[in-house]
Length: 429
Image 1: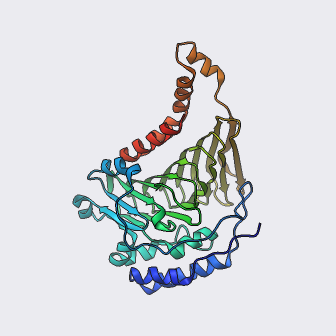
Image 2: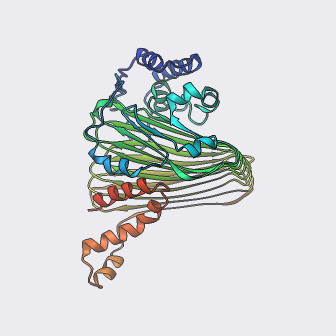
Image 3: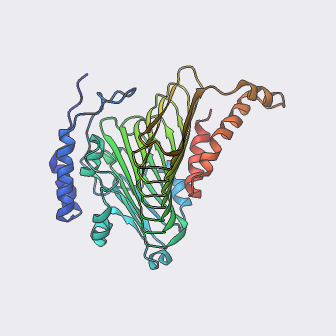
């Protein structure tokens, strides 16, 4: 089938620039990104058919209500007085930063406000980790992002509280295009959690393209939890990338529950000597979900290290493709990396693929290995629990939770952790 034509126009880009009174450099960047989006063909991925995807979005609402958010009411209440930005369909519902953090130079606000009030900081970092050149969906977001978040932590500032960003996508939004920009200056230390939620029925003729950029300066320590609950209907494209400088650490926590059609990339580019990144991930697909996930670590710095551990569960007619990719480029001597993909298939109609990839261009590496498995629940474990008087269904749930719990516990935000745990528990039938 021929690819679907885009139904968006440059006027949509100009409308956003005018609405937010954006500076000329940002308008020019948006327009260039839109030209790139139009020029790029729909990509072709092994095991994922994108020819039926519709590139449509807008018009975007300038105001939305708070009705119809029953699915996330408990989460929004649990955020309490913690630093949090909540956006629905591109419109900010809440932006809260405690006064003591503001006095320490921390900036945490929606991205449009940051462009207005902290233009130099935003201009220096925006599009540095994810630019419009790399893919059609990255160009789509670069041209049309709205309703994003900006987090800036100054040098040598360590924060115990978790910064939280919640993006809620409903049928009102006509496409979701959030962008998160997280900047950790030298030796800063903090945790950030984001959650994308599709609330209610969302039409299938729009695109969700979300981007998260993490800039970790020398010596910074960042924990970034990126969670999603995406439902059937739209096409979801998600790109999350960190640029990790000398002796900096970025620890990703990935979580996905849903029955949508999603293509996702999580990547760390280990640019500095002694840089390090880890990825702990968990996914649960049900219904007719299709999840194409690439988890990537690119080593350029000497003695850089990475570790990836992904665990997935699919049931009903869900189809998940997990790719872990490690690239050690020439000159990254002393680098070390490990990766592991483990997938559980609960129903005969479900399918999972675990595809590890090692690309090693440097001879002097300290370690580099991979492991992958796809299988069913171990019947010996089920039998052992049943022999202790535990019903079969309860025994299977216990085994599944033992398999998923370590990744869930790694989510730094208590409110998001409990919300995500409830989503998993609901679907582990």
